[in-house]
Length: 501
Image (cartoon, rainbow, N blue to C red; front, side, top):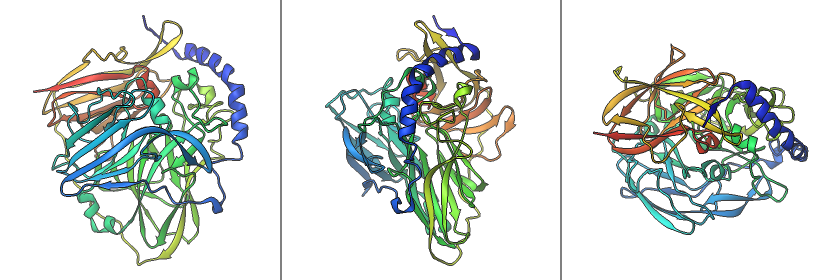
């Protein structure tokens, strides 16, 4: 029987795990203190250009293989899981109305599959089906059609075989999936220079292998001390004086949050998970929880120099003495981590190169539909409990994931409000992700969101109630919703939804 756990019991339980791992973690932290995340300017590289596959004549067809391969990471050999021997994997680009056909080969020693995160496509059959199981050394062909009215945007693909998701993503498996469309044709955006930043973190041992997680790392959500942006440590980005830079950013980490600032520059948000907003939103900083994406414009309006893209400290909850993330052991904000307010992590460096006539920001983007208020409201409680043997379980409405149980049944082509309630106010944040259908955030603790946007992942902080509005459109079938701290998903914080006429 699962027993609910309070903060005091959680601290006592996790403290024991912390003591057993702290000496080993301290040694690794000291070994890395010369800092893979603060290379000198001579080490600057552009972001890795993953192989690009574009649709042609209405078809995107590609072979993708997952395997364990050595890759160059921060000048060292790392043994990571990769798609087509690239970290991140190949960039896939399609357009609304295209057919996508992917022949996936699993060369891993464990089961895997593919999830097309954020795409509004069928969850059934050989489309975006999270229940598919591709055994080692076997292949499977995915095929689906992008709806003709699908929004343009920044999406991604990663494994989704329950129980192995966190380990496979943390070991490198992630790739971009871009839908090109009307946002790309807005003149000011078309004139901007485009860069993709896929944010990943890694935790390597002395031989370049991914560290196996200890118990507390799985409980809090594992983090690594090596931070990369599109396969590079501190890549160099460039902007022309007077120009615009379009950054398309994906948090592809298993658990790490990114609180981004760009020195002496503002961000102008033009798109979220599910596509464009109506007008650019000015931001001083940008917070991305695992699974979230954002597109921002940066203006080349400063004196030509170099400016750092920084990851500031963020307390995502958990054991307070550990500072939220992995703390003492894995680069969190605790006693031995590097990510403190005094020492933010450098993710990339922006360098001014050349000049152009001043490019203006776009005044209007894409209208965002206003959804009618529905009659149906559901409540989902996010919590944790202690299971027999002093293990931890993460729960939705008091239940662990059961692949044989449908937790929520909804009517196709209906609209519902879901209240997401984090009932562990002193513990940790949970980013909530829904497959197949995007939603809009209506309110947080009763206060309305400042602007409308389409999302598929929403952060629910400790003690917070977030209301989202979901149109269940087009596609019948079963899929899932879950916490996108992927260790929490693997440990039970996931449910099955069945959408039927």
